[in-house]
Image (tube, rainbow, N blue to C red; front, side, top):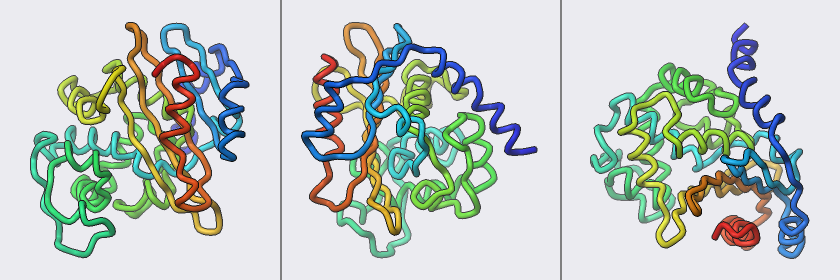
Amino acid sequence: MIKQCLALLLLPACLAANAAEWKESAAIARLFKQEGVTGTFVVHDVAADVYTVHDRKRAETRFIPASTFKIPNTLIALSTGVVANVDQIVPLDGKPVARPEWARPMGLREAIRVSNVPLYQELARRVGIDRMRTELVKMQYGNTDPGAVVDRFWLDGPLKISALEQTGFLTKLAQGQLPYTNLAMAAVRAISRQDGAPELYAKTGWGLRPGEADIGWWVGWVNKDGKLYAFALNIDIPDKAADKRVSLAKAALRELGLL
């Protein structure tokens, strides 16, 4: 019954995407081929309701969100009162961390930029698994399933989301259409803003998949000439030297005249 209910919740988004116009981009396919990368890239021109995509089948396939989940995790933390604002300092437990820039307490404005995994795990523990499950269903994020381990579900699963679903979620965030306060959504948008022009908002993600290539993400949106374009890239990363998430996504956006 629960699975049936979740399927019904996600059905409108699926139907909307199927009703839109889709364009397979030969130019973006060439970029992937030139770089020797396996993956997908999708851009939604929201006003025209047109999706430009490389590998639609993969764009509709769900993967672990990894650190792209820091965007909804921030929104959940703000909305549940776990933190009062994005500048509230969050103390950590002093345990060893994987990267030196994660070792000191900081607010979410800085934490999202350095992709501070331990800090966001602390936020998730404060939210708790029951509230987290409720919030995932509320925002209709991917398969909405946090499983039973509150501080690992976006890194190991069972939470998964497709590139297409990422663009849907981000479109709603960009337009202030999620079921959260305007103040909370504006704060998340502000700390997701990238430096420079045009007006670009984005977040990376890198997920480990035992026995398979790692999964790499770059997702976000661009405001260009008064129009909104939500995008998502995910690629297989067989080793660190093959990390082309951001460079490939930016090349694709430039090919489409959005950067």
